[in-house]
Image (tube, rainbow, N blue to C red):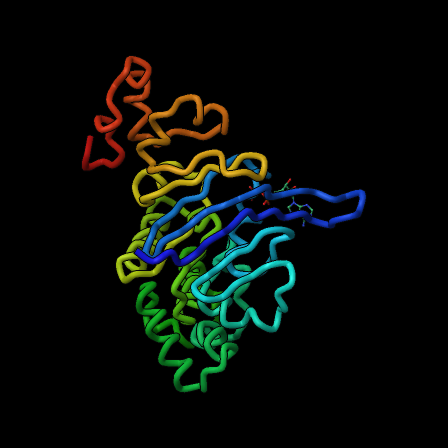
Length: 275
Ligand code: ADP
């Protein structure tokens, strides 16, 4: 498999040389392959957001190097060279609907492709494709995004990123604030994209989402990678769970006491299908 993203000995310091200086990442090395579905978990302040911003060039490493495909980013990289990276790596922040701004749904979703240099008809075609992937009906294309329900607004916002056809999609708590139905709908969309080959990197506090979706989970602790394993391996490690104040997925909770009695890793059911 291709190594699509490589972080090599990455440190990141906010406000270096000021009294408020804060080292947010220390010696982070990670390799992510094409098509992975990776979750990033850890306490608030452990460096998750800083880490994902290294991957789309919003922040540049203070030390070390990040490679995405054939693009290299280090402390010396000029921002002008990062436009190709921003197109390759789509980023969906928490509450992405706050970033909607155009007066119609279609214009809002077409904004990204136009910004990356597409002409209007091409951008519109990409926007329509993205809106159909997220399940927003044609009837809503000419409506103001601000008139939609919360769940619909989030879909439109996600469509805006998908329309740029990223190879890598980074999501920061994409299901936060949604009801269980809305949450499942969004996860289904993310899954479909992953099946089409888009690499998914998702920051989340929701361990059910990790158990049921991710093939790999990285635990951040005080700016370092504390563990990098499958969800099954993580949830069978009580010490790691406790040290990082992680919750347990509902599916695992009922079996958890058994872990202490020496249950085999392979016996822990992670999804409803396995229970
Ligand atoms: P997480 O996403 O896991 O909550 P962050 O990456 O946001 O963690 O933060 C890592 C550390 O960097 C924290 O100690 C946080 O307070 C600090 N930090 C984050 N953003 C800034 C900033 N803009 N300026 C200074 N320190 C920051």
